[in-house]
Structure formats: C-alpha cells, structure tokens
Length: 286
Image (cartoon, rainbow, N blue to C red; front, side):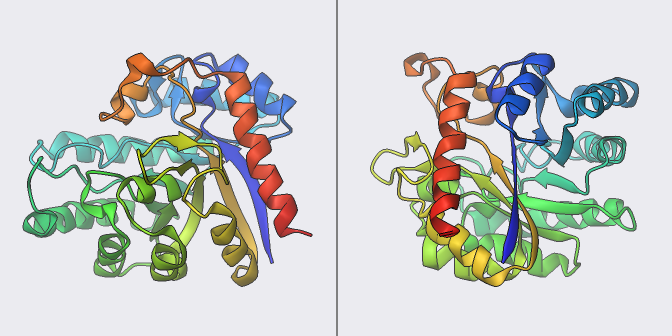
C-alpha cells in the first residue's frame, strides 16, 4: 500500500505566504508545492529570498514537497540558454527548500504545428536539463500539459525513455489529460505506471474541459489512486492543484482560460478540493 502525503499549490489560496501557511495548517496539510509567493514565481526569487521563505515554512511546520517550477513552459522556438540558466537557478532553490522534486514541462508547440516535427529539439533541450541535474539527487518530474510536446502519455513516455536516467520521472495530472481528450484510466495510467513519482490532484470534464473537484469529472481520480495504492509501497505526494477559481498568476499558467468568467479562488475553494480528495481516499481505505 502507498502512503499518500497531501500537499498543494497554496498560491491558489492567496498570494500572501502567511495566509497560505495558515490555511494549510487549518486543513491539517503539512506540505506545500511552492509555485507562487506574494504574486511572484518562485524561480524569480534569489537564493537569499528563498532562504527567508524556507524559514517561514520551517517555523510553521510546513515542508516542501516539490519546487513547482515553470521550467519547460516556454515555446520550443524561444531562446533556450536563458531558460537553462533559470533551470540551474531552480536546482539551487530546490536545495535550499530541501525538496528532491522539480516539476517541469516539455515546451509549447507552435499552434498548428505537429509535435513530432519538434521532437529532436525537445529531447536535445531535455538532455541539457539532465546533464545539469546530474549528481544533484533531484528528480526531474515531467508534467503532462495541454499544448506542450508531452501532452499525451505516449510522448511523456518518449521523453522519459529517451533520457534513460532514473531521475527523470512523471507527474501525473488527470485533468490535463482530460483536456487533451486522453483516457486517464486505464489508458494513460497503464502506460505511465512505471514512471509515476508524483500526482497532481485535479479533475475535469471531457465535454468542455472545465476543472471540477476530484471525483466529479472524467479524470477517474479514484481509479488511479486505487491503482497506485495497490502497486506502490512507499510515499506518494498528492499535490492539490484545484483551479476551481481565478488566482494571481493563473493567466500565465493556463493561457486558454477565459478568466473573465471565473470567480475568485481562495481558502473556501481550496478546502472544497481537499474534502473531495479526502472523500476519495476514505473510500480507497475502506
């Protein structure tokens, strides 16, 4: 059986780190996936500034499950060298935050372009990431995301197998697969099962791609977690990324969303997402 540890993107609660911490403690969640703090992306902070963030987390008993970096979330035709420098900075920050996971992506494909036409460039850039992370002890956790090269399970596996190292693994996001019209379970799950190291807990509807609380969409979150529970012996982070409302920084993360029609996010909606996940876990543990 797996030991599931709850974490989450607390910037969906509030931009203020103190409020993020307060609400996580209220929800009895002891981990955070650090992405946005005070309205600023974590990789835009200096090492000294992140050390101060880490002290605040330590003082409140909150540990970091992963660095929720934006690495690989640029266009495949965008200049790479500055982005590689940002990745090297992310490596430094992961060390300060004492986490072994760095969440990553595999570059946006030009609209109308065929992903296979950009495969060589994607893999070449990932080889550079892998080389930079060698001997750091970090796990480069690739997240499936709409519009990037690794938006399907087959191309996620392609990246992982092509890198051929034990520190490139998969973040499994059910909602993102649903938004790409991919069957999450058993299809995507069975393909990625040997490589899943981390879960993002988000659900969505096939019909319109709308994000909904876990268990209320087509992501088959319970089936996936049941499968992990049956086959995994060890810890597995379940990181809540609810996207149930608009929050600062969402426009940069989800370029296809019409934020004008979205209500504000906040503690209440995050709490709804937590309850939905805990309801699923209680059914699994019966």
